[in-house]
Image (cartoon, rainbow, N blue to C red; front, side):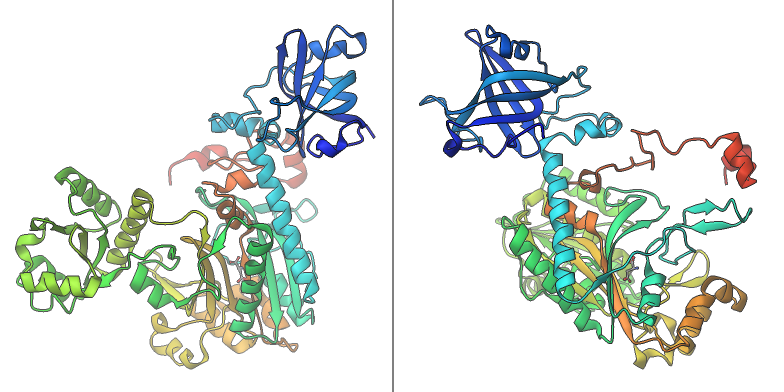
Length: 592
Ligand code: ASP
């Protein structure tokens, strides 16, 4: 071993001990002929002092930032007044008796001893250096603790961790597949799993009634801050359970996790709130509401049932809605501020935005002259809006009104600081619709995935009104993010067949894509269900990071590239020949 202790563990009780340390030069300075070095490893930082005039420690003078040193020395208490209360090891320092340079370092492309703003592309190109930074080290350590907690918690409750293949077949999670060409069967392709969905259900057929996996999922979709082409889920599945059994298990896991490893965070509520999909969308305009603050949406169709305001009248007549939110203390917004909000509302798809400012000197706003005083009072009674507040109305189709007001609600959350960053507002959203109509392709899509169990009482609606079929699907939401989806599954092959048919799959297609599932369900499939919390997204929220890249050791950039290894990259002629693949790039580059 190069060392007897880590840089972070020495305290005043070690004073007088001879120790050996190894690490990186974090910082270095000279003071009156004496060299001070902060030596760093992943456990912390310790101050080393050496008089370079002494030959056995002379090497310390050459050392530069990020050189790798081995130091032997004596731990001593720092002189009175020289202690550093901001450092865990700040009571002591090491008086070096020998200094050995284990390796030198070229000047780095950016400083790692500071969390200063560094160009994102540079950080990703030199990710292994970026990961030396304290913030990134803490994120990786937190990640380890979260994953270990999950493994321990579930193992103690009888779950088995079982790996499933990466080379598999298409899984319908709604994204595009990554394909891998087969050399042994030219012209054939594996699909990388978008999730282990089918495999975990097949494990239930095998009798492994409590399964989990820290599973890598691969989805070829456009990237956003909270998406990566490969990401990690806690994938789990249980047999002989109903919805609430799965929810309770997962709620128990995260409740204890927060208590044990995130002591600086507070749960908004325990037990967690549970909203139906319809309720969430009605009250917050979103199926992943941030419950850390109120500012709910209110439907006002009743109040405006007899309005003379043509715009509102027309919307009501054509089956639309008038809904509002109340921005606290914003009655004095300037014309320009209201115009900016209107532009924002239009970007969300709304035709416009109407406002009512309950200013101290009277009611103002763009809708003031169209709304009768008794309607203003009715709105106040309904929404609780008071003097000083700004009421924002959207009159549009239900979907547009909800989407726009939900976005405005989040805009005000950030602008007015309405959500406490230390609060974790976990909640359940249940009873999702089973199908969504895809107007572009004129067909029905599964809202979750096609293995989700429709509500039994809704089975007759397959023939009459698919839009009204609810399912036993549920989401775990946290602070405005969807952090897990799951469902009770179909375990009867007749119902599975019905769902595939409604999705427009032809018999041959059902057979070629999912024949193995349909067949498996004929050999005694138990009732089962599960879910899959997204580990990266949860960590992003736990660590207070703005982006999931910050909690993944080696992420891709927005264009799906690994800038460090420069991937993807061309395949050699020989590799392509072996796969019997000919590139036709010109065609691929033509606009669609
Ligand atoms: N496979 C699903 C997903 O990735 C989760 C589940 O239903 O368990 O969203």
